[in-house]
Length: 90
Image 1 (spheres, rainbow, N blue to C red):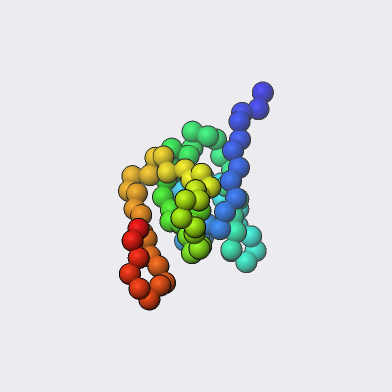
Image 2: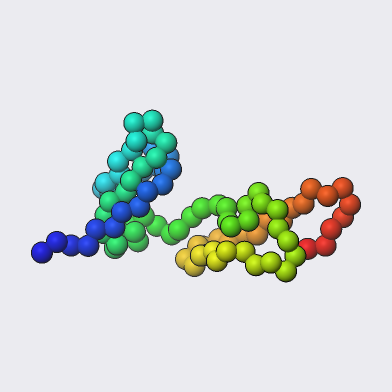
């Protein structure tokens, strides 16, 4: 019987330490594929990252963003900015 294998693709930096994990990089080092068991995800530590559905995007008042998973992140931070010359209220 075969076990369950999980595969994820990303632009992981080759400088990250994936001790004991199977990570295959593209020839230019700009993309990678990780293969492992679902339980291996917990060995990688807590989720981390930056960005979101509206990062560097124009938004409209009253219009919701796409859903965005934030569960499991130890630190959550919201950064708001604008490019208007006059003050705005968030």
